[in-house]
Length: 428
Image (cartoon, rainbow, N blue to C red; front, side, top):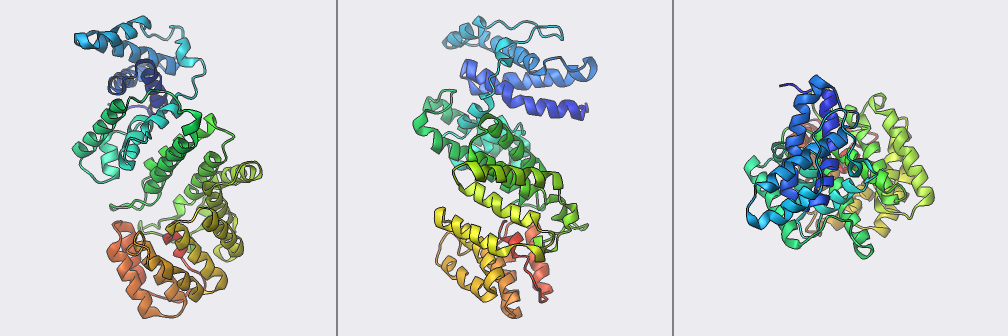
């Protein structure tokens, strides 16, 4: 059966809210998720024919609560406590005329945020945090997540199941973390969303350059966090960074599907509405919030997006922002990106000199993007043979087929350029 796109989008948006409401009530992640899936199935069958209820969220919560109660009543004696708890919460038969569940619509706007915190629990490994977030909050199926990370569906199902069991064993409760843990836990949530977006924008493996379903989910979930925490500078910074980066999506590939570097993109194809929103967001945030790394990265993205062409990019401003980012939040990837900005301001040899420090960093010495950036800078410096060798080495090391095709093409046709496409390969 084909589901109406509008209904499908609505169900995907409501699913994490409904799941959060049930987990908060029962504390049972697996059982709640099963109940929500049954409610979503019922909606997908009924709504296209009967129409969307006046309060679709309350309808779903009501149906899912009934399913949860039914499941509890059929369990063994050791689950009778959950049965009684579920029975105390009435679950009227759903219909378009039913009054809204007051608990479902009474402003529990933090439920999705709380669910995000639960999925990003520190007891979980980063891969498990990613998988559970995409499954429970992003609404992606286990098969979709498995395809995104190129693992068998059974493997991903086991990973998600173990993550839920780990949360249960940790004794975690469905509530926002205490003030003493808030900053660290929020940082994990933002990092997971950042990783989801990056995997979608530049897939680390597989034939496709990008996964628009992942970038869309990352932006949607970050918007949800921003609605719950509108005054948090880093939340706003991350949302702005995503918008400003994703705005270039349509121009990142040519008709043949091959990667088009930033310097060569047709900027008329960029999403101006997303750029305007991102620029407004980061401008307001920088003026009022405590500075953070996502805000600085968003500011750098804004400089690129506001330039009419690559030649008009304010590279000295980009370098100044990277200098600040490297001083306050140093990392190997910041060093790599900064080297490109140094090359654009001070010349390619200066940029190559900046890369030397990464050769001694075990985290980056074998990273394909180090070789890709070095190749671009060697090309600019007039050393075509060394550039060709670095392109080939980068192509050998990347696991992305789209990047490999691009790098191999560069190795075959090195030509002098006034500007560099290294910015695309350095992840900005």
